[in-house]
Image (cartoon, each protein chain N blue to C red):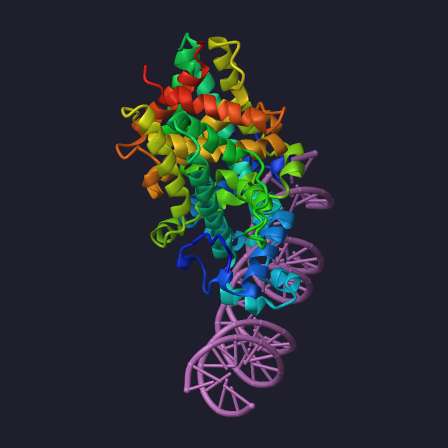
Length: 222
Length: 222
DNA sequence: CATAAATGATAGTAATACTATTATATTTGC
DNA sequence: GCAAATATAATAGTATTACTATCATTTATG
């Protein structure tokens, strides 16, 4: 097993892919293929082919493509939470922690070599392009009860609590951080594909600056 | 023809649905069905059935479901632009206009009886639930060139310019308003389905307040 | 070594996303 | 008011997708 293990709710798979070699190959190739062709064009048949196995084998791990995406995205949030916890240890003010959190959301990720079957950089790019698809469905309420969105909620809570350390009277910590996190994603997407919707022609640094300013100005006491 | 006509780029249909009775029935029923069953579960066959016509007839107006969604969403933004223009005439400060724009984004819409075949309230709810699906695809760059996202871009520009009237030095008008507009959507969705991601248990008024504060604090000179 | 479990190979089904064809209305131009 | 053009209805057909099922084979485990 890995030195580091990100836990993902058992509702997000049929059979735990982290426990077998085939499972890990499914994760690894799914990320690669989904990034390459996009969620809509990916099929379990293509994954089966890519891992030199079969469609049926992929179905043994995940009920369907939607669950696979939800798994990958929850893995990403779980991993980001670990990263944040690590980095926050070295920082002493809530403001510095918030700033660093925004950087982690936006700046490119290095591969964590403790987890060789997941390419975190590619996964981050995939989350940017696919994230809202896991909740923008008619099944959202049922899936919410299954814990499909826990990863995201936990990060929002963590950041919201930091904001309340700065200003205990701030009224919208949940709204603010669900907004900031999804803006972190969508600004990356817009910069790449719809540049008229962002002012970050100069790169991700500008996104970080925009979000940091927006966050701190929102929570400041006045 | 209608007293009021919202123009949507000709790239967003095969045959203009506003020009025929059948076309209008397609629009009307599509909104109703998509709202009811969600984008994923809607098919042209079901639309054909609902309008007491056929699948083939729907294909004569729209190339596919994706184009239909893009049409409806562009229609919505076009209509919102008209609404904003109307309301801005009565307002004299950029700040008041921004505040009113946020209300229009968030508060429930009344049916405009000049356009009987479109139920604006339902359409608004549909945009909240489906909007990101039109750009989160691998075809985004090609469709961007076809003008699939013009409606959204125009609203962002308009609001960005209002912000620059308040503070000509503000550096991120496009990023801010693409963020505010998509937050207006996602906060409505979260309030309904994932309440832990918002602080608007009390209703849409809180969303308006949150977004207004965030906007004005961001653009203020300091 | 025996048994269970995981995987591979293959087949099959219902639904989807179209395309094509032809017949029948309906509109429009003269 | 009629012919020609156009729009729509009715139907059929195809390739792909999203699964489910079955059974043989390999691999792990006690």
